[in-house]
Length: 244
Image (tube, rainbow, N blue to C red; front, top):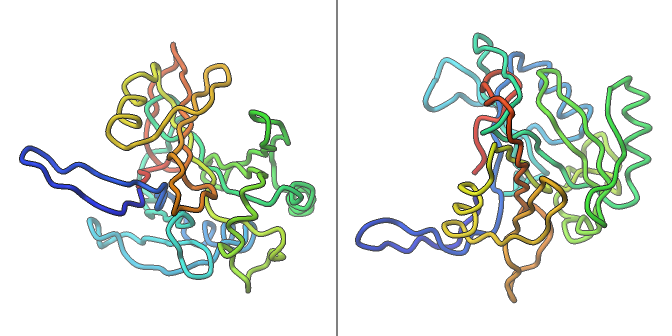
């Protein structure tokens, strides 16, 4: 999470003034296929290729906007021998990117031209249009068309394959799945400073409260899906490893 300050107490470090999502890290089996999908198809900038600091034998791929700004950074650990991930609870089920309100038709046409499977568009809450797709490893992604994209016009890759007026503006949100949402909700609200702003059936939305000096514009939304009687996820290829 993007933070402005850490306040130390006698017993623990309390995180203050969290502004939103800094980066999302997932697991891939094939780095070249991953680059082709995210840089060429989605138009994210391939910022750098390095190694996993905890596992120097594996690649670590970074994507973002032109400058790799916080709130746009998607990274991947290259772990080809990891098991295939399986959907379920206790994981990040979907990573959502922000696109301009009038860009939905552009992306639908692009995916059809490239023969990429997708689902939607469908409406979420009152002000979002969403399409869902999966990357080559099965990682679930969303493109969310929302008016807040106007506030994040700098979060693009100007030299990329997508026209600037339709380019991805960084993250919009991430979705967590839980059998019961109460414990996660408590951490989000009491420890990280999120507030519950909306509910739609089993989807509970948490957002960072607006501050006077802060311009809100996405990358500060966590959705929690309550999915009782659903098996626990198995983390592996095609899964999110962590969100920060």
